[in-house]
Length: 231
Image 1: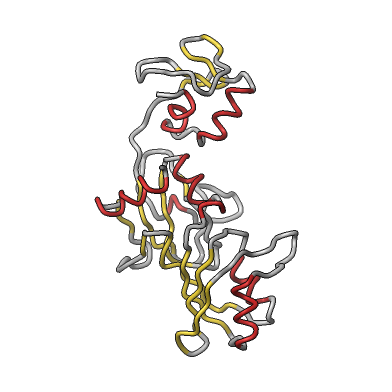
Image 2 (image 1 turned 180 degrees about the vertical axis):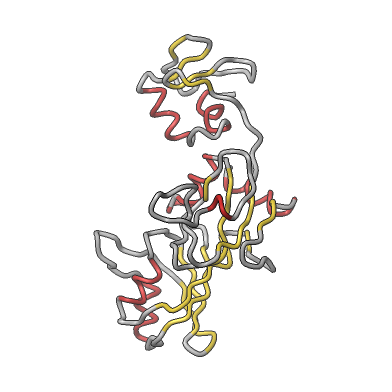
């Protein structure tokens, strides 16, 4: 397979970033410097980056119900509750996308760098669906502005979105980006504060009947989503 795909398959980084490492002269195959991203390698070849030996690892994909109070990181010295408190996995892993400490719901956990990169990249426009409770409902005019896109500061402008009132001060919201605390900032734009935010879907992967702190590996149908995202 191509060297950049091999690197991505080890979970070290994405194919795109692997290309950069190769161009920077940091990749060797069997102790020979490689500078072409199209270089072909075999599973038995010795591939190193900055002297670190890479090993192919079996990819896994998990959906997790993250409760409020946990950060989407494996370790943070300033937070006591992280992903290691929710998952019993003896392999390196990370979350494919963010969900802030005060929010809850669906997280995808994996060791697949390429899959993760595609999940979070805005060009793929994957739906991210949420149920949002607020302290003040929006007017129809404000809902239309919400859907068209907003300048939420820090040079960040949201793309098209979907919003629908589904209960008493409760909204269904679908976005495609992943700016820090994006939905909270979108409602704050209209002086409405989010009281509860729960993610229920990323692309074809739904939270379904998972309860807080529960997690499960992708089933056969959900693995089709992985193939679609990595195409």
